[in-house]
Image (cartoon, rainbow, N blue to C red):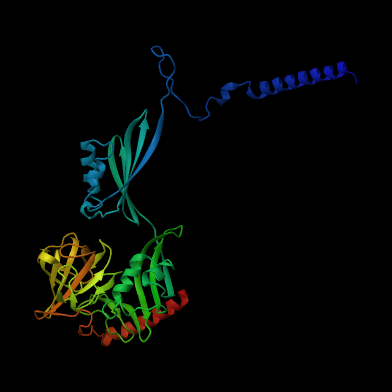
Length: 422
C-alpha cells in the first residue's frame, strides 16, 4: 500500500469517528430539559451590573470544640462564640432545666455547630457532654433555641483480671487496660491494712473482678463496681468482696469471713506516692538541725489528690506557718489527722464542714518550709502525735446473722461469675 492510500484511510477513519460521536451526543443529550431537575450544587449569580465579575454565594457549616478549664463557667464559654447576650441568657435558662451548671466539671466538652455564609458565622446548634453517657442538644427552631437530652444505651460487661506486679501496681494494671479509676479504688480498698510504699514487691499478684459499660460499638464508656479484689504479698494474702444490704443501707467490702476492710483511718491518704521521710528524729532539710519528725512525708507530683484519711469535720483550713497550706480534721474516738504543704484546697473545703473518708480535700504542693512537692501527714490521738504507719486501729465491722448469711451466698455467686469471666 502506497503512502497516498494510507493517508486516505486515516482521513476516512477520522470522518467515521466524528459522525458516530455526533450521533451519540444527539441521541443521549438532545433533550437537555430532562436534566434540569437533578439536585446538583447551585450557586447564586449576583447582580453584576455594578461589578466587573460574578460573585458566588458560599455556604458551609463549621464545628468548634471547647473544653471547660479550671475556674471557667459555661457562660464564659458561650461568650467565646458569636452568640449575642440575649441568646446566651436563653441558652443558660434552657440548659439549667437539664443539668446543674455549677456541677459541670473541668474537662466537660462543649461543641458548637455554625453555618457560615460569606464569612458571617451563625451558631445553629450547641452540644454539651456533661458525662460519657449523655448529651444535651440545643438547636434553633424559628430563630428560637429549643433543647433535648439523649441518653446513651450502655451494655454491661464483667471483667476478671489477674496480673503479676512488675514495677508498680498502677503500671501492671494499666498494661492490661484496667481503667484508672478502678486502679485507684483498688488501692484505696487495701489502704487500711497495707503500706503500699514498703510492703509491695515485684512478683506480688493482683486479682480484680469488676463491671464496665460499653456502647453499642463495644467502645468503653464507664466503669461499674469492683465485686472482688485480692492482693497476694510474699507472706500474706488479702481478699475482699463487695456486699450491699439496701434495707439497712449497708455497703462495704468484707473478707471471706464477713469482716469489714474499713477502719477508722487510712494509713496512706494519697495514691501513687512513695514514703520519702518516716516518723522520728531527722535533720530538718531547711532549718538544718535535728528535730523530731512527728509525721510522715509522701513524695508525689504537685497536684496529686489528697484524701481525707477518715470521716470527720474540718477543724482548721488555711496557712499554718512552716506547714504552708494546711488542713486538720477531727475524727471520732479522739483521733485527728493533719495534711501540710498543700498547693491548694479542694472545692468546698471550709472549716466545720463534714468530709467523708476517701474524699479529696486538697492537692500536693510545696508551700511553707518545703524543699519539694510532697504531703506531710500527721495523726493525733488524744492530743499526742503518733506514727501513722504503725498505729493500731480497731477492727472493722463483722457481719452477723442474716447479713452474714446473705454475704456468704453472694460470695459464692461472685466466685462462680468470676470463674466464668476468666
